[in-house]
Length: 83
Image (cartoon, rainbow, N blue to C red; front, side):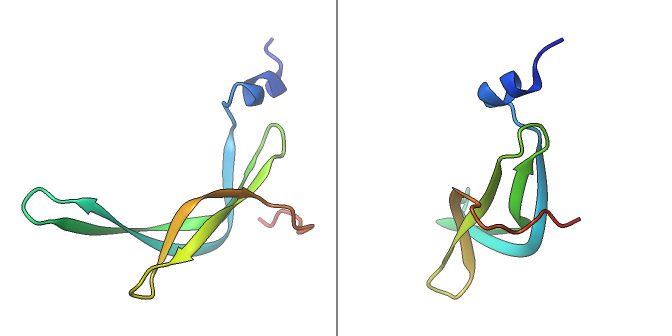
């Protein structure tokens, strides 16, 4: 049997998303026009069910007042996982 922490050390985490839902926006090159704006509703935080690593999204405001996600930062707050 493979050690579960070995999978996490290889980068194969088993993520569970939780926290507040936020809508993020981004732009992609379009086929006909210059840029196409896309959006998605995502959770604010995630944690690995195997090793317990917790991360929160880095959210930055766009010029039009919407939010974009630019990556993940370690969640160092003492907040317990909510279901």
